[in-house]
Length: 328
Ligand code: ADP
Image (cartoon, helix red, strand yellow):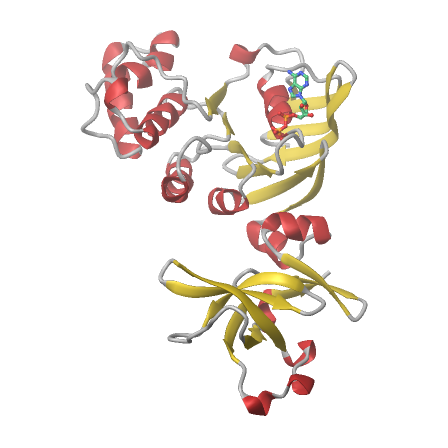
């Protein structure tokens, strides 16, 4: 068995069970995301893998060798947190070189490796900058370079982008994906953000109350959420229709003004046409959106066709894109 293997992992804090018997594999070269709502046990699981929390039960191996009793610094794993925890009194290169100095690497090799890493994270010209002169996103790139420098056999990342604003997070998630692949890194990535998990990871393990409820590639999870709660967590809108549970993708709905010919009686879910009423109108990312109330289904946001004029209170027809609907 190559890479990381956890079987029946349990983490407890007194009487609280944070991780309740989890099986997890991370193969060499693979990036696996632990995705789930706050408090579901992601960090506890990651910390147990790092050796920062003891396993109350279970078996943890790397390449088949038992890791349970191995102290944190002997596991050969790297760590990166939400707050990069950089050394403020060292410059950028001084931070990246830290682990290499600790490992006793010769100076010339240190310099070469630092340059390589700064190049990899897009900060080639930043070597002598003070940490305090960097933006939040730049600081996290330095933290990533520092964590990658000693070539950890497994990189553990705990919400590394959570402190950044949404736009930067989206941008850096894509970069992280590319950097981890370019470095051939094996990684376990904790996040509560499904978009981030789907962007960064090869496989996603969906957690809920201390357990992994589903594991798969982003495409597999999106195509077949294991249940309604999983679907909702991934961003689907879940509705009941004629005894069926339907998960509807947030991008599957478009609205257009209701025209006489449609006649409410002809509008039904099997034809993927519904009737609704506009609650409010907004504008996001260059597109007009409408919050629509659909009888029996509740309220949801839909995209408006092109130059459609919509007013609050007006009746509309709602087109449901069939490919955006999953029956659970
Ligand atoms: P997540 O990372 O998914 O937000 P955590 O692993 O941080 O979840 O927490 C899982 C559960 O364990 C929560 O109920 C949390 O309150 C509890 N917990 C986490 N750390 C501690 C701690 N040091 N002492 C006591 N309870 C903790």
